[in-house]
Every structure is written in structure tokens, then in C-alpha cells.
Amino acid sequence: MSVIDEVRSEREDLARVLEKHKGIRKIVEDLYPDSAHFIYELLQNAEDAGATSAKFTLQETNLVFEHNGRPFERGDIEGITDIGEGTKATADDKIGRFGVGFKAVFAYSETPHIWSPTFSFKISGLVLPVELDRKPGIGKKTRFEFPFNNPNPHFSSVVGRIEANAASAGTSVAVVEWIYETP
Image (cartoon, rainbow, N blue to C red; front, top):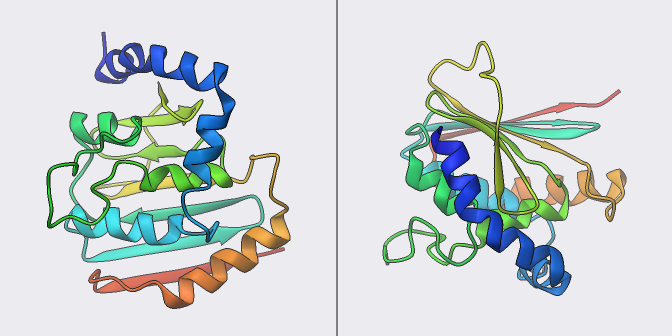
């Protein structure tokens, strides 16, 4: 059994609870009043992984984020697919030690995709990792793709909120590049 399958098996009970009690998901999504808060979370995760550069590419149907930090480890998969039990829970010096920050992406994307040199997977149902084929050309970078497939927000509001957060996101990552690809 692969690491992704093992973690998925560990998360199935949690997924059933989330499916049965839909209010839990709403609480998690609403933790941050700014619905594009995940921009900060992505940069903070890159910073915690030791990245020195990061790139956002905003397209009409998705957002792509890449960084050159440490590749994903099993603990990262466990942390990103859990609620309240992130990898930084006991690290007072780490931003995002509460284990819910990444969940802010689900306000826009039902199925975030993650490719790292070590693991490739998407997350469905807020907590279930599903193995993906490796993506050619990634090299040593970690790449996140967020299809805008949450039925709630409209694309025009997504872009506006993301652009506003991009301008004010502070981080110690040395280079943060933004590319806008609109039709």
C-alpha cells in the first residue's frame, strides 16, 4: 500500500464525519474572514519548507502555486489532510501551527492538486488524498494547482480577492512572482 493510500485509509472516518455533519466544513472554511486568506497560508507553508522563491500563476479557471522549498514528506501529507493536527502543532516558532490554515483553499477549490518530487496527489472531501500521476517538468519544485471548482464563489470575486491579497502578503520568501494569464 502506498503512503497516499495509507493516509487516505486513516482519513476515511474523518471524511464520513465531515460528510454527515456539513456544518464542520463551513466552520473550517469560515475561520478566516478574508476568503482569499489562503494566499498567506501558501506563502507561510513555503516559508516553513525553506523556500527562497515562489510563483503564483492566476488563470481563468485555476490558480497555480510553485515553490522551491523542501519536498513533501509523509508528515506533510498527514498534516495537510487533517483538521487541527498539522505538522506544526507543537512548533511555537512556526506560522500555521493550528492545522487548519490550508483548509482556507477549499473556499475556492474542491480538489487541490499537489505535485512534489516525492508525492503527487489531490485532496477531495477536505481530507482524503488521492494519488496522481507525476507531473513532468516539475523538477525539484513543489506545485499546487487549485481548480476554481467550489460551487459557491464566482470567478470575478475570486480574482479580485486573490489580487488584493497578493499585494499585501508579507513573507520572508525572497522572491514572490505573480503571473496573470487571462483570456
